Image 1 (cartoon, rainbow, N blue to C red):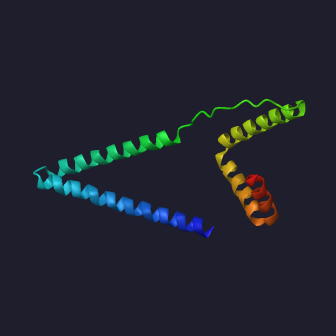
Image 2 (image 1 turned 30 degrees about the vertical axis):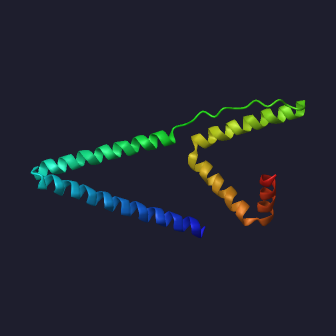
Image 3 (image 1 turned 135 degrees about the horizontal axis):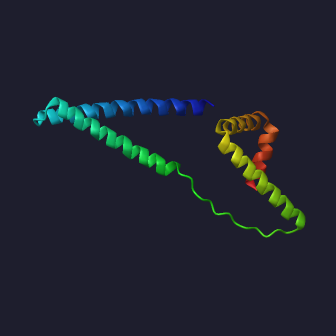
Length: 135
């Protein structure tokens, strides 16, 4: 938990430093334009448009990174009718969980947090999960 808090603090500090650096960069653009003979109003307008272009580019990158991707589903041949029924039931449960998680993202995050706390708090459950995931 301390690592997570330290990472979050470092990320917040990094965002503040980047914002200050961008502010100074904008001021440098304005001063450079004014030194080149551009009026102060025009220099501010040009720097503002450059900032808006930068924000638009960042928004485009975020949109590309956060778009939904189609995941190919592999078909598995069942070994027995019981396994087939279990696979179908598991698929239905997974679909329902996905639909509910998309409808209520904060509830899904809360459930994930509760599950993580339960696994972290109960050593037997944590060991069982580790052994299942290793094999």
